[in-house]
Image (cartoon, rainbow, N blue to C red; front, side, top):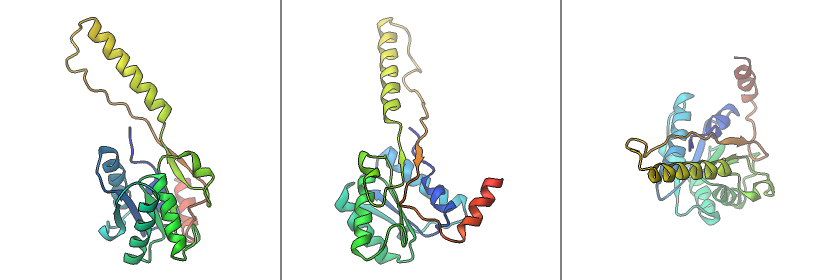
Length: 193
């Protein structure tokens, strides 16, 4: 699964330059890929990485997101957007921002990852990244079946223990991200390239 989605470049295209990132405390390959996508997107657009804009939440749920929002805004009140590792964290980030008196997306934009069932029911409706879960499950089953069939035929499966399948996540644009006024020109220029 390819996790370095379009969410970070999307925020940059919308004019955001001070983008906070809420990561999970326990590192795994998919969280590493998301974080690297954040760092790469900043670098690709000439924005220097600032470790003060990154918070590792103590969990990946609602309350962790609330605490992360408060920590980020205390450290860097100039943040205009926050990208979250997971949608439940993003819900908590929105609540934490509201508790601090910020409006989403008017003051701070928020984007999640996973396109959970309730992202359309949140207020504002959460912009997020959808992972192709159904397709991932299908591909995993196909690989398992082919391996079982190959081992049943006692074929030499050396070198075929690993498969690299890239499944593209999809950006779901809703209401939680705003365009910074000067960014409208940037978006038009990029579309004309």
